[in-house]
Length: 232
Image (cartoon, rainbow, N blue to C red; front, side, top):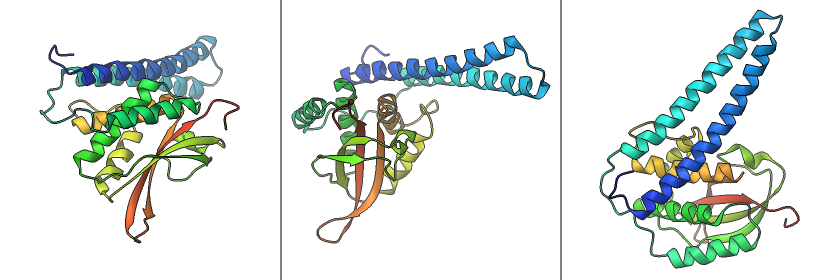
């Protein structure tokens, strides 16, 4: 990382590295499993050929992950106001309450998720509301990650904002990949960090339309966090 990097950039790089290691371990475990099968041999040439393809694909994904982090480190992002939002004290208290309710996510990870989410929404002037804490029984609809389909109770952090097609498309893109391709926009990297931290914690995120008291259409963004056993 460049010497003049801000503190939040260093925090992001550390969190990205943790995500990278987590995903690399998953791919390596898969790759090693297929290599063991290859070593044992198989009477079916088609099966051996398929295993070979799986190993090559896992190896390529590992290379892509490393290149993505290298891209983030060396990319010159345009100067913009990426400082924490004015509500940082409020977010710190919110994070403390979430952790007290035994949500399964590290405190530093959740704080960064909330700060970055607010920065992303403030950048497009989304006129966000206060975060609301509720409990939601899974499986739930409108989820962007795979974990929301499991039957369990989630602690939900919900916020409403003005309708915006950019948010929907950006989140959809971020959910369909581990990290952005090289030379992606700063917003893409920020959403990737949010998605990656939630994916690591077996959490989820969803975005859907709601109607407020004035019968106006709004978007609701919810961060869903699993709870420790016995705290549902």
